[in-house]
Image 1 (cartoon, protein in one colour):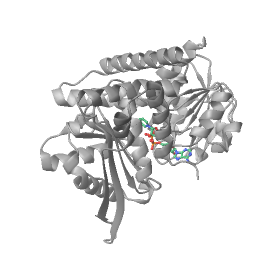
Image 2 (cartoon, protein in one colour):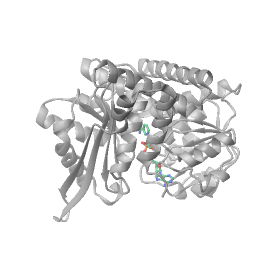
Image 3 (cartoon, protein in one colour):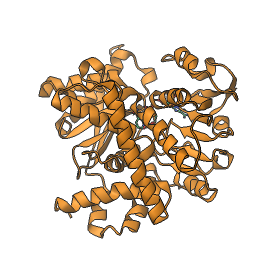
Image 4 (cartoon, helix red, strand yellow):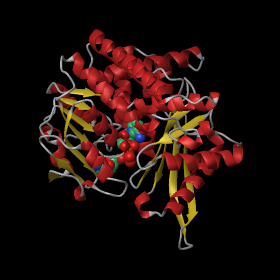
Length: 412
Ligand code: NAD
């Protein structure tokens, strides 16, 4: 049996903790989620029948601050997935030196099968079910796969109906409900910034690089947009239906305009249709998996030809594929660094909500790059000084901070 998602993340945590010589007592606390909730989420369907979903909130570690993490709606979501994503949030928040712990939420449902009213009812039902353990200073939600600003608005309203006006319980909200300009684009903007930093470290300029992006949702669309704006040639993009390949470069602006919600790439865009398997195998300079976990695994890793892989999704490369890529000299930029623009932008929004002061978009984007470039330098220094790959280095920086907070608080 291959390791579960949580076991895969735990393997990286173990490897970095051993190199850091973290003492056993602290490791015991870092290994397990602090609290996890598995709730029934009932709603009345449009036809009057009752539908029931499973909902999860895992609060992995809160040594450095309130729990923080996204909310995912997906038919395959289960407790193991949410545990793993919550653990990633702990190390990511710490790596970026944000005053947050790590959490994640999920509901096992396919939003495409629900009406907008049913989706809203499920979101409100879930929020009420977990409202005792979330809050602006306790646990803060954010968008993830199949959730967006609209969903965060419902979360905020459902929570506020009990606790009073509480915009800081969720980030990634609509601008009129305390959202901040820049947050929607922040993850993709950060992915491109970190990609540039890594390429620079290898003496490569970003303009002209051939980029392939798997996943054309919030993250993937913005990666494609910013990569093209900054001079890269986006030669392939895909979504769940497959993708498009244009060797001379996709007209990204035109594709973004054409693919409004509900329009899939199998029926839109120029160039040749490719399957996701074909897309991952395209010859390119930078491959950006921005869809789901384990997109690149032991079975398809041999077909991957990119010398740089930038993990915009969480855990898109399985550990066995990661080891094979390392042997081949492929540089893999780990998720907890590459996609950390999202939680960093959420931190700015949360700060803005708590202080009731609205940031300008320019300030948001400027600070975002400062945070990401600082984290990149710290990871790079650790990579060079300790002779470890970028993933191990990123975990080492994050784990060292969480371990120290654990000791200082007297928890271990
Ligand atoms: P999204 O729901 O907006 O988009 C997901 C995209 O992936 C869609 O284009 C969908 O069609 C595609 N997809 C789904 N299943 C696929 C499959 N089997 N093969 C190929 N494509 C598939 O989600 P998102 O917010 O863009 O998140 C994408 C990834 O980035 C996830 O791993 C998420 O955890 C991670 N992430 C998101 C954020 C954020 O701010 N939204 C922040 C950090 C990390």
